[in-house]
Length: 404
Image 1 (tube, rainbow, N blue to C red):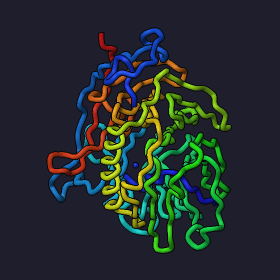
Image 2: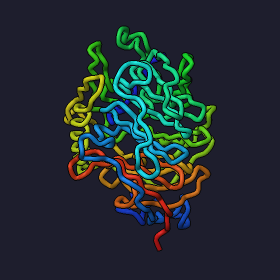
Image 3: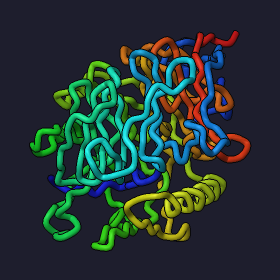
Image 4: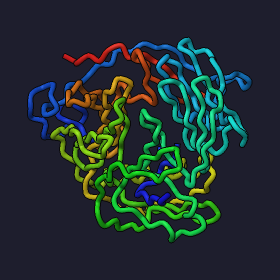
């Protein structure tokens, strides 16, 4: 396998602008109200609480160590991956424990150094470990282990089981760093679990002439040394639709591409929202976010030690990209998080459909994109309680109603 040298290797971490009717006020949306070209139509999300799990009692089944990810299956069961306990807890619709999958260890059916636990809609699992992939059936029974010649960082899989990854590191990179040439651009790979070489599905757009040098370096002691990089470079955000296409954003402007299984662009969703120019206030806000992210990155539990350059080495792009994140929910609605007026990625959220229909916009202080979505409007959020202990809250999205 080839080694990828991504601009941003924040996959080791547990890792907008506002139109006229939103918070702030960019110009550009001039079309009819309720269309992609028009001003924001603000939405009120009607929700109801379902259950919350996460106990302060040390011997309870839901006393979590570190909740890395959550996912629903088609029956509405919630699968919670606790990376500290190295297991997956399956929780029923009533909030009770159904079963536990995995556990600490190196044997068949046990977890060790897991980077991602992918849950399919039928409840089967693809668990990515250090240079290996373990498969489990929908009942949680161990099926087989596949040895890989790479460390994979992926939380996504196509309906046919192939993994989608923009970052992975070949094992040869540790012993022969010069043996794997850097690929051009930002390629997104499809990785079959049959030993064949990764296939480049799509090469995302990238800014030229990065003045910061290499994004990271890995030495034989498993120390990752990361450069500060360039703030406000266009991110690479994507998620998988139920038909296998990707909803992808890689631009400075508001542009969501739909990428087919053959790598072609099958559609584009755009809104006339312009990027913000980077000023002193935006730079200072980003420096503070960098300090916080660096502290979290260097303290996280990992097979690697992470060292990152200081904030004084941070270089700034001239504009803030419009889009800060993309998620696809259970019903194939695309949640497009725009950046806030200070450059933060947590701005207002547009909800659109793959065929280009604009449903509306959620305010910054409104409902946020979930950590997982499921059938019947189920949404799950990884949170922390008043004691700073991890919890998982499940709500049901009843409706999205336009204000006014």
